[in-house]
Picture 1 (cartoon, rainbow, N blue to C red):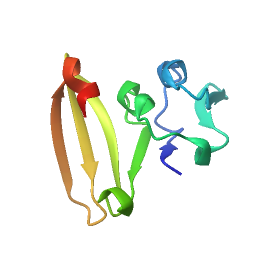
Picture 2 (cartoon, rainbow, N blue to C red):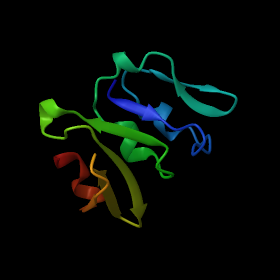
Picture 3 (cartoon, rainbow, N blue to C red):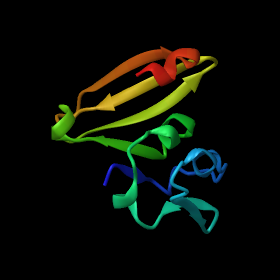
Picture 4 (cartoon, rainbow, N blue to C red):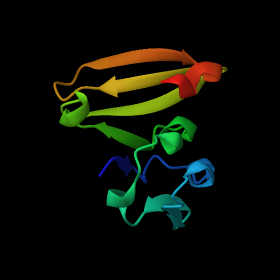
Length: 103
């Protein structure tokens, strides 16, 4: 599974479903939901669109993440990519929205 949707944080805006290229995100009781997370392509489009941090992307050991998760919040044109490591530490990478697809 590449992503996890935390339904308790979801506000039901639908931005994640609009950008999912695999049309894997639907809604259950006005909250985003993915029936088959194993089918996720890992493109992180939904993560970048979620403004409440309700979608976490798992950074697996195969890409050096060792079980860390990433969420994204925004402040104007700046995206804050927050990496929560398995040891509890948090690293934030600030990216200008215009450059966000370069990474």
